[in-house]
Image (cartoon, helix red, strand yellow):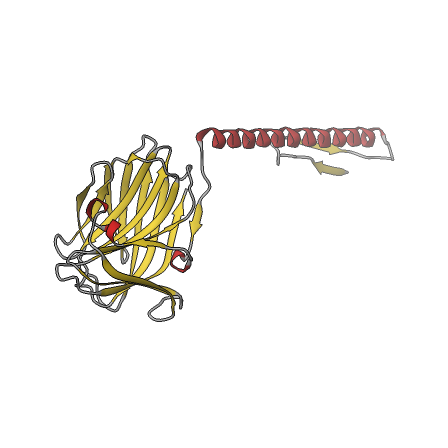
Length: 287
């Protein structure tokens, strides 16, 4: 007696258990079993084909949905401090773009201090009190990017010299300019402030920003969002592993430009004390 268990359930089929009795060489049952097995294989093939067709339809619908809703693949710009063609200005860094000039400079590819032997030094020198300098690096316009994570490490030897340090992401798209500007107000309020682009004013977040420790690398991660209803959303700040959620909204202003860039600004204090800041592993991730 030969017993065969033909339970094909991988694709959801169940043909039960059947028994084959072969006595004295009778081939009638053998022929029936062979036909039955061929039928089983056909059903398995048909079921698998139907499932594959369903999967392909779902994938097609997913691609159509992604196209219709404007989903955007994540992009990451790494080690931006090593890029060439940074732009800078001093007068434009002042209030309403009309500040006083200061001496300043940028020196790239510094092995010390550095995390990866390739930091960049940004320095501001003498001038009238409260003179500032702004550096920025264009990354190419991206109208589909709505979410931004600005991450970097910075090192300072004279942390009481700045009035403030600013870390910004700027996007101009569809006739609007979003200035995601954040400021660690070291000298006065000792808090983080964020920029209201439309109304040209700082908003105090209430989140403390203490004087950074000298001769030590500090890790900064800031998250922003350009909302679907065209607002600036300041999401959170993480400093040396401690995260605070701002959840503050502001508004953009009109602009005919198309751009995306990261920026860093050094603000002078009441005596315009010279100082340097080293940036390393500057990264922008957007999607």
